[in-house]
Length: 346
Image (cartoon, rainbow, N blue to C red; front, side, top):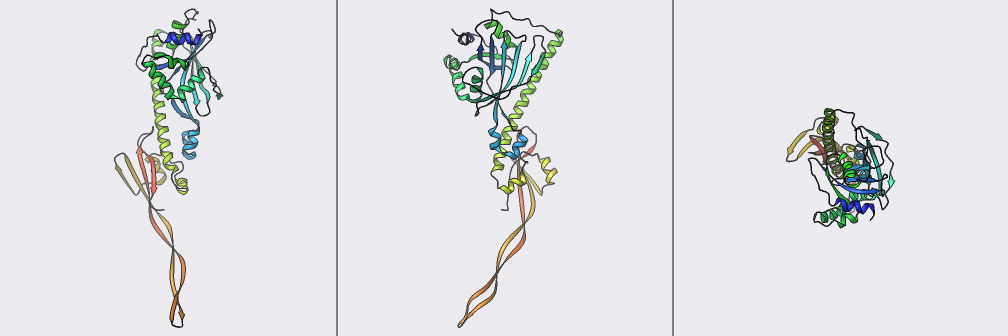
């Protein structure tokens, strides 16, 4: 029986512990048929994070379409290598679904003594139809297919998940637990290098606590980035529907805070708040041009007037106008933010 299938069947029998702040993991790849050259790949699959190649501050002027062209899905992959002189390797993986490309954005190698170092990440590569990159692509880009297989697995039918080349590994807080899983369950015939520590027991406990705190902080930053991305896309969509002249006037102001608006434009003529929206009104005067026709004489015939002589001219006046800015709370920044706008003058 091929190694991948043996691993998949073995994993189906594993108990699943669920500590607080645990993440769900799938086995997405297995390489090597025997010691000492085996590798296992695990991917967390519950919530791939949306990222964009274009910085959000540039997207404000480039527009939603340009932003979406560079939409990425990001998730984490852990590799455990039998022959490597390290504990495990952690990858941050970016997937471009439309281009079917993968980039390892960050690589951190965790040594056996608890230290770690970062490796220069790879460039974009095409994703084939086999191997762990293809399964990571499925997780990131075809959630409906994955969720259908997971639903069957929850009902006791593991075949759809196995047919995708994956199996459920369990829920774990620390990435090092995936290394333990690899050696304790799959590589019992291998010789595991011993972990060693340059830290005291107190230092090790503090390192673990700091790591968990950093993970929680990172998770919050990821959630904030997701919120900001959704908000910017909504605002950009509103701005894209405006006329070209109005777009130029508001270019780069998507999502501005009220303080930024007041700093740039001064205090509004009026402000009001109702429900989930706050409105700022700025008044200005706009030149208005009207064509006026004056009667300057009559055209006379034998029997009297037969017509009028007229003269047209352009009359200029100043029209009182309003810019009405709609603000709401959203994204990752606190307070009221520019969400939409309109003019009462054409």
